Amino acid sequence: MAFKKKTDDKILDVDASMQGTLNFKDPVNLRINGKFEGILEAKGNLTIGSTATVIADILGENIIVGGRVKGKITAKERLTLLPTAIIEGEIFPAKLNVTEGAILEGRCHMLRDFLNVEELSRYLDVDLNSILDWANAGKVPALREGNDLKFERKAIDSWVASGRIGK
Image (cartoon, one colour):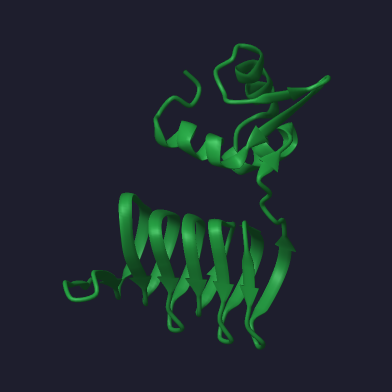
């Protein structure tokens, strides 16, 4: 396993075969060049290199894919698929850039600035009834429009980052 920290461009380069959960709470420039299986959460920039094979649920801000990914990708700011990218699964990007040659076998659900209850349930991977309970108790930032609830994605992201989810 090799972790290389390049101080000049502040990139954490991972060229290894790993399983498990990687969770970066602080912004990082992370590049995966090997094999990874599990759950990957990163703030900042995440690059899946052209030689990488990833089987994971990925949550990040700016994600660039050049290799193979099987799983769910949620990009809160931007998802870029390079010509060598092969994605098998669901993607949830706020913005999407697909370069000619990239392959997507699956579904794309664009993230919007405002989410309804069902979208928020999928976005947070939380049971629909929990979302409704939190909203009715005022535990989650929500807007009411008549009988409908709307959730601003940025407010939800801040709420989750603060650790108040479900409290």
